[in-house]
Length: 104
Image (tube, rainbow, N blue to C red; front, side, top):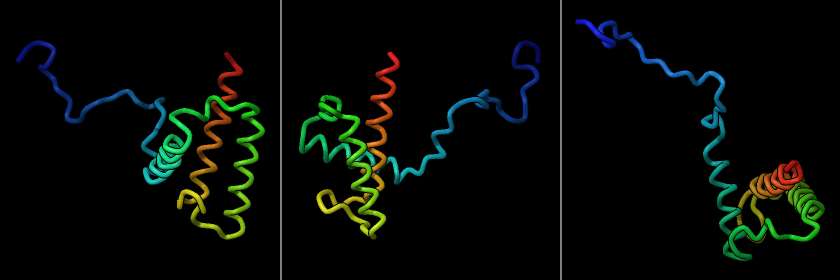
């Protein structure tokens, strides 16, 4: 057999060595953060978190409240019923977004 397929490899090849390995993120964590964002959208409107005045201080304060609640043994947020860590992650995402926006 001649042509480009004459010598096929026994195993496939994909050059993904330097790609971000999103498959390493715990799926239940992604779902938990998604649930926090969904509840926020239902309560305040979709992407309302991007419109807040004094956002950095308020998101930091929210992270600290959820962290202290978790540290004191809370496993389920009083309002959402979700693990406080998911709320912390959502607020950390908001702060990261603000930081990225400042770079522009």
